[in-house]
Length: 237
Image (cartoon, rainbow, N blue to C red; front, side):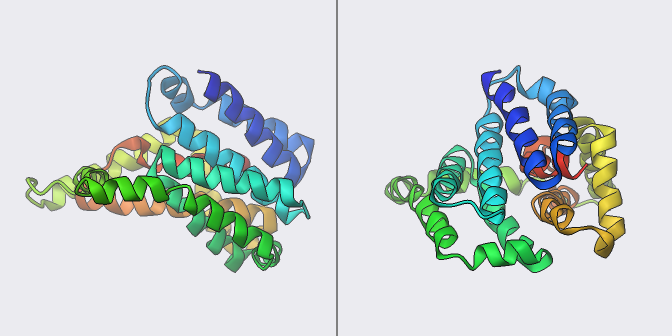
């Protein structure tokens, strides 16, 4: 509950950095009032800490994009590292940074700063103890994650595949809120007409939903598996 009290404030700070106070206010309200938030704040799971550190990492990145210094690089490192220790889905964040560099010139210049690469390396280094433990214990966490994604007992069926994919897509409208997810789809349709900050948020949200949607069509997916894309989606909306 306390984590979900903090996340909308961080989302508001991201929105304010990219688009001013009005964007910050509405982004924060989107994060506060999303149906999935009301559900997630009532259960004990790994998603709230993941999204907290994702939001902190994204705030640090947009502040570095705006010219921020060492303090924001330290926050970026902590966001990446603690996010990875919360849930491996934080790896999407690194992909989002690279994709942002392709679609947003300011992000590309940000990734050219040695300070940012140092923060990324420091964040990844925080996962080393976890990886060493896995190596000493038969990669149990990695195997468990793989079992979640791939259920070998299922027989492939086109009808089931379509039903699973449609169910997952429909659930995203429920988790993020219909307006937020519709805005994400609209942004994808607008494509090159988006400005830099909009493309930046799209890079940190749409690929997550797309990747998990593919998994959903192939083997089914839980609705929360794409939760990492919510932070960028709130600001983009």
